[in-house]
Length: 529
Image (tube, rainbow, N blue to C red; front, side):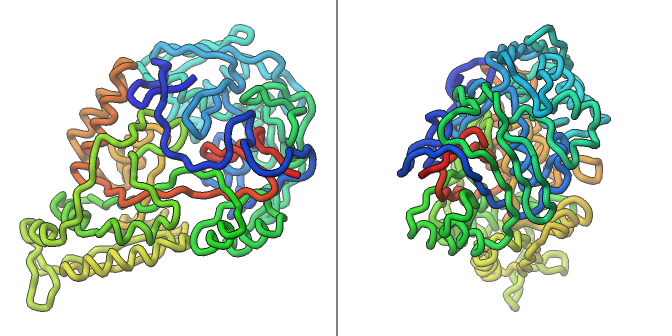
């Protein structure tokens, strides 16, 4: 079941996926690679940090998702190509204000209990309750949704039209009855329908999952008897990139994300990767009143001053790709490739003219001033990302020549949280948003600001975008994506974001192959002899 880039889920046509560079195919999971499938053994994947709380409904960090997605499954599986495959649900319908899901027969939970339509309804209703504050609430489900069940058929109703209703609900990770009855128990144990369930947790070290027998409901008809599956999966915490590289080369790791110069060693050894698009070169702006980038002329000026041909390869490396849109994770709703917008050419002279027009005049000391204060810009970036610092230095050189006082600030996790959501002490930088839906994108560009409890940390107020987004949310299925595409174009045209370049975040494969939409799919692992 494919989806269209201009027709939403309910229309049931083809979704034009982003170019996800993956060496894994979809022949039931693993794909083509040299060597033969060998069943058994332990598949070891590197994660960069401890996942902490294992409650899948509260998961936020990528490391937590890397772990909980081993044990929990969804109604619909979205492939790296944006195709929809039955998972827990064998079929579904969508009418915008209602949807039905028919479950596969014989699904069981890790504790041996039956997974029923009522279990699905209970999951959906729990996530729809704002009091429970789950990760899915407000992004793919709200209190407008309610669900009931009769046998294997789940009926969903929504008080508002949602052109992506079945797709959104189909992405929610399902918890079994015992877990729903005892939510605190989910923090350090797993209780899902996954083929692999947590058998050992060593905080700060590794999390081990063991395959269970009798699993028959995987995507592509994968069962626990499918050839090439491992007996166990170990999610091992390895934070240093060089160490991950060494372990991949030695065969001690089967999976590990590596960026930066260590990629050369892996490429030289012939290791392939599965990967997802990453907006590594996206620039966002703090448009809060009183900050320099509250003026659209300043946003435009400093954006068009950037030489994308020079900066792009530095920040993106060998896997750099031109941006094809602001939605880049599965389920890849309303993706149009190439996008319906184009970025302007680099023009430093025009940038200077725009700054003059905005009132930032160049003084004899080479610094631009307005009302007696210099044009000072705080450029933030992620300290652990190896390519961010040198690419930021190139931007600083260009902006300094224009008379901008550019301060570079390398952020750790605590600084990101403080600057974006508390102190608002930042102006621009390599700041990325990578949603799978324009509805989620709207939470950041059209929603409430952090001081009002929202996610719009950029303080964007784009009237044209807001009007189109409001119309798109309740549009007919055959109109919604066109409106969302127009809305995205408004963000680009007003320089609310400037996507310099994307790249592929590569998850390298050693001694195994696998499929990775957003996170590695455990049923797709195939061990190689």
